[in-house]
Image (tube, rainbow, N blue to C red; front, side):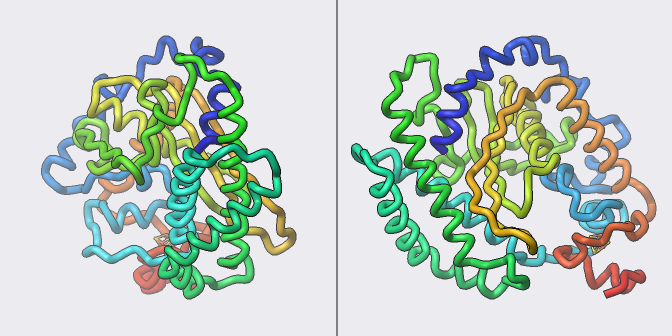
Length: 332
Ligand code: SF4
């Protein structure tokens, strides 16, 4: 997470982008962001179920049949999520990054690149041993050549080296009181960040768990991992967290941060990748985007019938409703 700290202090979005966030109208505690009466009533009578931030932001199923089956008017009885390589890798990534951050805090003076490499090799080996169950699970879920646990661990290792390097870089800088330091960073894996917004108002279910929070800097963040590059819905997730936070706490959040680590190579090339940090103002345009997506999702789950099978079926193999959709005509 030192990548976040250094990126923030080098760019100072709270100063540079102050104009973008100085007059935000659509706060999670204001009526303008609340659900319309029709949807609130549906929630109050349990006709539909509240959507989570990830329900709203994820695009696994382009027609959103999965949301309908999960939370809609004629929902199916609960089915558990299919374990996937990507989900498992995401959980391990979060754990690794948070542990590497903790280790970095106590790192002594290091003057050589070779020492950083050695320290992280040792740390990664220990991490793999301590989390052997997770790595065995990853091995079992691996379905393609790209889903390679050894290579994944290497990419985590490189990310850890950058964490340590960022920490050393940060230590050399004179931090002013107004600048971000590790003491400002609240990490969910260390100090749980549990948000309980009012679903009938904001349309987001309870038990929201952002990965990190910079309360003093009005920023909220998420650690993401995946194949290829950053995707729009990663930003949507942070906007949902900000609205949920504002709704419950009555306090403003102005910035979202996505810590993104590409963990898989493609069929055609196998790059070494570095964590990427995206800091963005959660301004009224961003909020309008989230609210439109949220309203569209509530509209879908409030209908009498489920949406049709989508054209793009690339997510079907990861979906827990696969068997049901095969029964409705999805070709296996
Ligand atoms: S199996 Fe495919 S079509 Fe069916 S809900 Fe899941 S993603 Fe949508």
